[in-house]
Length: 74
Image 1 (cartoon, helix red, strand yellow):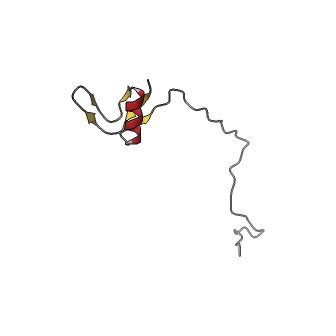
Image 2 (cartoon, rainbow, N blue to C red):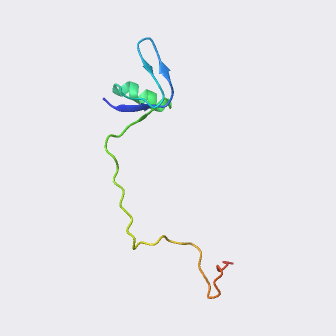
Image 3 (cartoon, rainbow, N blue to C red):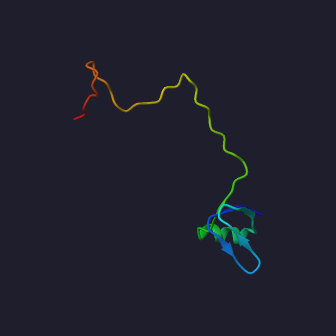
């Protein structure tokens, strides 16, 4: 059963969910609620992000001339 995060308050005859609540739903219900924008899928595994090394420098788009001013592209 997929786990979803509720995006809007939902209540019915036998259910009541508040915004931000994470619940497990049957497949068809989870799909229709996600397509309607009422919920979003929750992935259990956290994605790995590479760590930035201290030696890596951020790229810059401006080029410097010898005078210290940014060069203009014409």
